[in-house]
Length: 256
Image 1 (tube, rainbow, N blue to C red):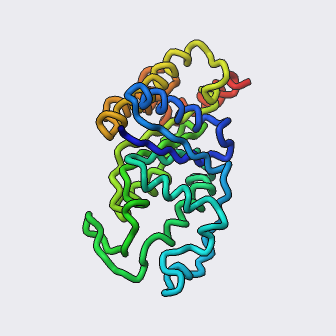
Image 2 (cartoon, rainbow, N blue to C red; image 1 turned 120 degrees about the horizontal axis):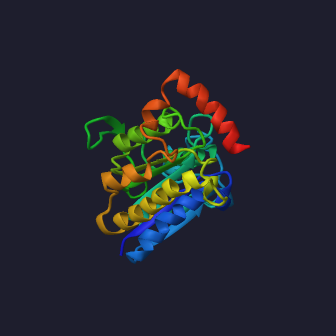
C-alpha cells in the first residue's frame, strides 16, 4: 500500500483552497486504496531553528534541543514512514509560507553538515538523512494571481531542494486563480465552472496516479495546471499589455 503524506502549509489550515485541493488528491489516492495523511502545520507547535549548532556537537549529535519540546520531530518520523510527500503551500510574498520555511529549516538538524559529500546529481553538499529529506515529492502551489511569474520562486526553490536532497520531484501542481475559483468552496460563474470541474477532476486523477504509478503523468499535470479563464489562448493573451488592461476591468466586475 502506497503511503502519501501531505504537508499543508497554509496559514488558513484546513479552511483554505490548499486543503480543498489536497482533499481532491486524497479522493483519488483512496480510490486506489493508498494511505493518504495530511499534516496541517498551522495546528502544530513548530519552533524556528536557532542556528545554535548544538545538533552538531558530540553531546547532542543530530539531536535538536527542541526534539521533545515541539512537534517537528514527530512529523519527521511520519516523513520517514511515507513513500511520497506532498509539499502544499500558498504563495506568500512571492515565496513559500513561513510555516513551511520554518519546518524545512529544521531539517538542518537531521544531517551532519561537517561531512562533505556529493549528491546523486554530483553537487557538493553534506550528509543528509535520506529517510527524512530524500522522499519522492510533489509540490502543490496555490495563488490568486494569474501571472505565470507569481509561483516561480517556489518552483525554483523545490527544484533546488530536489537536487541537493536527492529527492525526486514526481509532480508539480500550480493552481492560480484561487479567488476566481471561489477557493473550491464558493459558487463561481457558469463560464468558469466547467473548466474548474475539469481541473478538480485532474487532481483526483493525479491522486490515483501517485497511488499506482508513484508520479503524476504529464498529461494529468497539464490539465490540473490549466487556466480556468474560458478564453482561447488565454495564457498567451494575458501577456499582451492592451489585453491586460481589459483583464483588470473584467476581473473587478467578476469579483464585485
